[in-house]
Structure formats: structure tokens, C-alpha cells
Image (cartoon, rainbow, N blue to C red; front, side, top):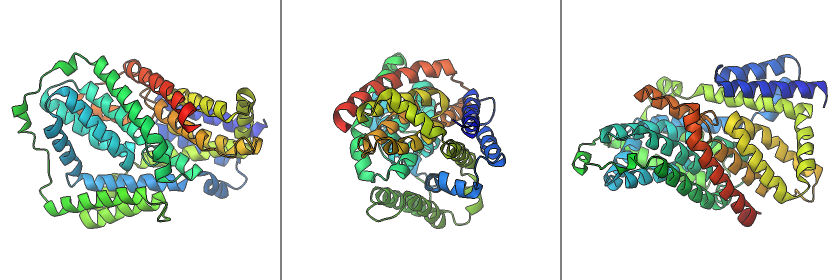
Length: 428
């Protein structure tokens, strides 16, 4: 590797360590890394590099979907979902937990996991408070269910959004492969949480109290009805956006701004301010940092090392990429790892056009690895960080790295083991 490749690799490692340490804000350290690379001239044409390496489809998708969720949240739509779940599954803690997590997993596949966390962790906490039960199993259940459910579609998880932009999967093609393993992974996750918190699940629910849970329908029936219709239309638009020849980011932006026009036209500044701009900038900076690895040849060098180690077998490369991306994501944040692996996978056909003519299994392996790795530790993904922040602000409870690791890492290991089998016998 040349000196510029070494420098770009060092900057990437420093950024990842900074994110992992949590001593410096993730957006600050990643932006400083990106700016440093631009200032020292790693890119011969910085603006061209930004255009080439930054996936604006992913960024605009997140902007649109965050806005859409914030607008719909004001109508009481999602709280009404929670109220309905409580009434249907509130007979005991087991049925409530399974009903809530399954619902969250389904929703996460269509409105993106970060948005799902922002909606449902506060709702789960309010349900736990109302029923006077332990917050922890419900919080962890929501975190893991949203991550696994988001894995099932190409718009549910940030890594999947990034992968789908690079691979050009259709929604139905991707979901047909990923939904079955996501269901299996969710069952494993839920069974383990029930086992971990067996004592908490033995608490009986007073069904008479459920009648007093009125966090339901919005008082403005017109806006609520509009929200329901918009939600259904947007989900359908995402499912068929390839057939309609419309980018996923276009659907998301249309969803966000049309919902704002119909539901909150006088609250434009307020709603735009609620978008998680720090997350958008964080991902933007990661694209630049990883782009430097591509620009300087570091990625091609690492890819060659990987192929030398794994051999020129599509099966071995896919499994190794799943394993490496999972364990790396567990400690280095799955968005950063996904951003690093996408150009690596894209470079494989250059090394062996015949073996790597069809990269679909490798893309699925990368999705499984990064998404499942994202549940292992508190710092493995943005949804984990956001969920635990909400828990602390709402209840004062703080989950340590070790405590989260005790649950998340075991669930990741078992799910990865099952996913390797699925990849080997179903996908490959």
C-alpha cells in the first residue's frame, strides 16, 4: 500500500475507535476524519469524490422517513397501534411481549429501524410503567425485534438501505430471501429473552386495569384517518417502487413532505428540526472516510488479502464476510462496517469475473452479518444507542456495556450460527 492508503486506513481506524469509545460524539469524530482527509488532499477532486462516494439515496431516504414518522407520530397512529396490541395480547406478560415484538418487527421492515426505536421504546416503557413490570425485557425485546425485523427488507436497516443501493435488489427479491431467516432469528431472540427474564414474565396482569389504558386514538379524527391512509400508501409504494421505476429515497421524501402538507402545514420548521441531522451527517462522513479507502487503493488491497485467505469460492467468501462483518459490527458500529465492506464486495468481480459474476449471495451475507452484529453490544448500532438513551432519560435506568453484552452477544452468536446454515443451504 502507498502512503496515502496507509493514511486513509489510519483515519478510518481512529474514527471507528472514537465511535467505539463513546468519549467523543460519533458525528464529531467522523466529520473531523472526513474533513481531515479532504484538507490533506487524499482526493484529487474533492467535490467529484463526494459525488462518487456518498450514497445520497441512503441519506435522502433517512431524511424523508424520519420526517414521515415524526409527522404521523403527532396524529396518535402509533400509540393507537400500541393500545390495540395491549387490548389484544394483554392477557399475560408472555402474550404481550410476543405480540408487541412481532408487531415491532413487522413495522421496522417498512419505516426503518431508527424510526421504529424512536416510536416504540417510549411506548413500551409507558406500557411497562402502567403494568408495573420490569422495563428491561421489553426494552431489549424492542431493540432486538426492530433490528431483526428491519433486516427482513431492504429499507428497514441502515446497512440494508446502503446495500440495496449498491446491489440494485428489488424489494420483493430481497424480502423473499431475508424474511424467512428474520422470522427464525426473531423466535430465537424472543425465546432467549423469555429465558433470561423468566422471573419477570411470571408476573400476572390485572385485566381490569387494561380498560384504563387510553393512550389511543388522536382527538383529530380527520388527521388520524389521513395518517392511516398515508401509511398504507407509503408501504405499498416502497414495495412496488422498482416496478414504478422510482427510487426509494424519492418515495421517502414524498412520504415525508406530503404528510407534512396534509397533517402539519403550519409546523414545517418544527418538524424539520426534529429530523436526526446528526445521524445524517454521521453517515455522510462515514461515506467520505470509506471513500478515501477506495480512492487510495486500500480497499482493493484488503479485498485481495481476503480472497487470498478465503480462496476463490463464492461460498467461502460469503460465509467469511458474514462472520467478519458480524463480529466487526459488534464492536465498531454496523454502519461503518457496511460502508467499508460495500466497495470491497464490489471489487470482487475484478479479481475473478467468473466466480463472482453473481454477487447476490455475498450481499445477503453482508446484510445478515452487519444487521445481526448490530444487536451484540450497546455501541454496535445507532438504534441501540438511541434506545438506551431513551431508557435512561425516561426511567433513570442505565444498562452497562457488560449487561447488554451478556444478552445481545449470545443472541447474535446463535442467530449467526443459524444464518450460516441458511446461507449455505438456501441462498448459495
